[in-house]
Image 1 (cartoon, rainbow, N blue to C red):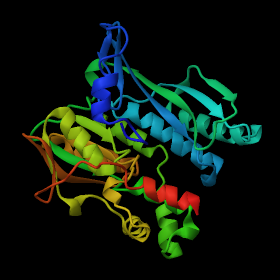
Image 2 (image 1 turned 180 degrees about the horizontal axis):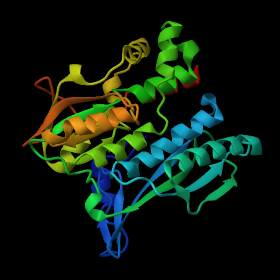
Image 3 (image 1 turned 135 degrees about the vertical axis):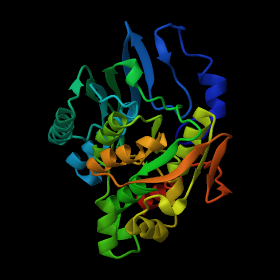
Length: 335
């Protein structure tokens, strides 16, 4: 088990997967490594659900921090292709977070949920000694819909095309540029451009729009381990091989320059807001148009083949052992 971040596959298979409580017949999709959500069958209606930490970074400003945190939670349900319908947060606030600060966070969350058509169904809010930023709780997002409309995270098929939105390392780079601009040895224009790329909730709308425009066989949000890690999760989940062209993947110049300045690999850095989408070739143009219609940079970058593993430009891509951005965050936060 790793010291930080998600548990590894070996720990999951040995300690978690064999112990999942009662074996209920209505659990249509339970926990799996690399799978973003679970599904409960409620009398023929699918309840898609996913639970994630709530991470609030005060340095972003309360409103921006709230929208960023909410987008991460909702994305894991949105990649099912169903729009998030319900939200249940549990806030464990640090004692130093005053009422006005939390009110600003909650107002931004409410506004975004309203824009998305998502209702708060239950929750918990309290202050506790020992709690600290950025991890101030957790939340469960839900979506209700037709089980036939669900995009399975392990559904990629040989012959499908691979699409990528937003780019490699954009989330990590945007966070560093927003929080530590004075510590980045790059010009102000570059740093400001990278900071402006912090994802909000447009990738949530993009995932739903892509599924509606499809058909789409699989979607995945590239979080810990970045684009390389997400590609390995997508490939192993479906039992396929993924090959892609690096030059076709969006990688904005400002992101590349900030990553170079901070000496980390953007391909293995947390990239929430970067969606991986697989679709049959006849649906590619429609899906790209839908993604771009939500303001996302999107490109066709590769293909799904029979076999296993991930390759870029004909060379094998190893699975990341960790997230390349974490040591940078630790270093910058300590300066």
